[in-house]
Length: 302
Image (tube, helix red, strand yellow):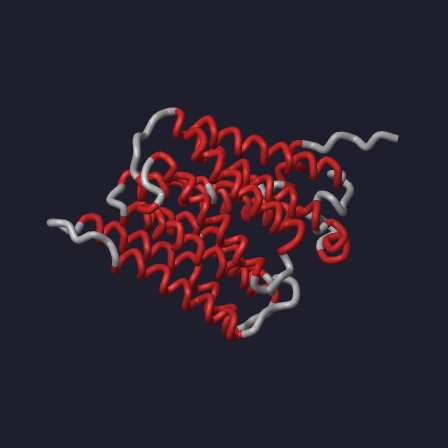
């Protein structure tokens, strides 16, 4: 008997569709740092990032289907709403779409960088995820390459600091996320909080000094928003390193990607890009509030 086709909502849950908002700013930050022309074709780069990110989410659930059947049975695959084959095919299709979009945007340079991201995504989900060092390092490398994907329009070298900043944050969040089921230790959570402080200060202290200091002020404002988004949750996890606190801190760390992208865009002297990313962050916040309110109404009704 043929399994029924998954619903659109189940596929959206499989790929964590709203979370794609946290990745489209990577290439915007990379483009701001690396320079190069802004054309309609270059706007395919955020789409390429989103495709590769969503592919990783589908592959994650495909690779973890047996573990999720025990720890997270409500997810699309163990609940039976999406078959493992469909999840794998979705991941493969989105990977191909991401590489194709990158190639259409910036040619061979885009294909090369996007292929590196894809290789890292597949290696992480299928082999390296549970390695205590190589797992976070691979995730960090993917994020750094995603920033460099945006710089394929100009100078890759100029975008290295921004790529390093996003990669370091990714490594910290990935390390912390390992405690989402069984909790973490105060030392791990405290080190992640320390990394956040360093990640906020680095772009501010290295921002170019201008006659009116506008770039430095914009960078400082975005860095403050970044720290305010994720640092409180990390400090709570350090004080109470339970699985629940770690999950909250991990979510806030993912949401903080956007203001961090804005920080590096502002450092590059691109305030418009930083403002656009600020709008994306605000939209994501509004959507999350709306989802929480809907959940509370459903609970009260039932």
